[in-house]
Structure formats: structure tokens, C-alpha cells
Image (cartoon, rainbow, N blue to C red):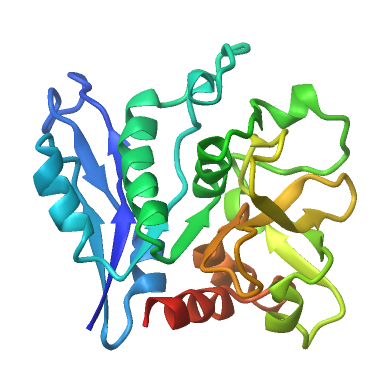
Length: 247
């Protein structure tokens, strides 16, 4: 049985909530759970544990790690000051950076999704556009809160990207798009695997250490791919690829 550790999304204390108002809640989005759970594969939500030795012991049991999407990174995480209202979630950053550091230090497979890709870039010393709409000249709609995972755009694979092999059946590649932040300066030892065709925004990355990388990140949400069917690339090939490294 493969054990796949998932970094948790967080809801911080909020006394306006009728239940658990003063408490921190950790959760996984349902589509993500359905995407990751398979026969002989069990997704395990990683709790935020104060005792670091206990935390590391838990991490040591995992065969691979998933970093899911959610709230923005705090600009302080990549040494910038917030612009406008984009404050991010520093507490979640610190929790996830501990997991990411453990996984990379111990050469574990990593699949980083949306926020996860941005976290990986920040961990490697990169920076982010805090708000694409105000910081990047583009006509591409990268996020629409109302339409959410029903909008898409085309990406192109770069160089010798292994993604070209995974998705070789189609000459064009579209993905869903649910992000208002994106990679600005690429982190050290990272390789660009894909970019948005129209505006060049980075859509996929990996560590440079091997031709078939075991640390990958994508800006789109493969777990939501079912909503647009054949209009976008399927999410399963990416997860299959990740699991081959976990085994």
C-alpha cells in the first residue's frame, strides 16, 4: 500500500463560525481526495504537529508528497512586501515548507499543484507575481472566481520536457486555470517544463537533477480536469507518472 502524504489546507480561527470557531481546521478538497485515492494507494492528510520529532516520524512513513492548492503564499515567504490586499497565509507557508524541506532532503517524490508549484519556487529562492492582473500585461484570463475551473488556456511544453511524452497524443494542450499569482523569478535548480502559450507565464516546473524528474509542479489543477472533459489534458497521466517514482 502506497502512502501519499498531502499537505493540508488551513482555515484559521474565526469566531464567526458556528462550529470550531476558535480552532484551526486542516482539510483536503474532495476532488483532490478522489483524484489521489486508488487501489493500493492511500492519501494521508498531514496534520500540523508541534512536536517536530513526531512530525518528522510521520513524514518518514510517506512514499511521496502532494502539495495542494489554496490560499496565496505570503510575500514575506519570498522576501517581498504585500501589494494591495494580497497578504497570503504565512502560517501555512511555514508548515508546508517544513514538509517540503523534509521531502527534498530525503529525495522523496513531490507533486506540487498550483499553490504547491509557487511554494516549490519560493523554497528554491524564486519570487512570484502577487497579482497577474496588475503586474503582467496579458489578455489571458488566468482566474475567474465565478467560473472557477471551467476556464482554460493553451500551454506549450519547453525543450525536452517529459510532459511532451506524457501528452504526445495531442498536438495542442489546454489546461484549466485558477490562479491570480504566478512565478516571476525562477528559483535555483528549477527547470521550466511548460508555459502559457499567449503570455509566457510559467505553467510547470521540475528540479533539474534528473531527466525523468521526481519533483514536479504544475500551475493548473489536474484534479479538476474532469469538469472540462476532452477540452483540456487529462489529470491521470501526471498522477500515474508521480506514482511510478513513489513505487
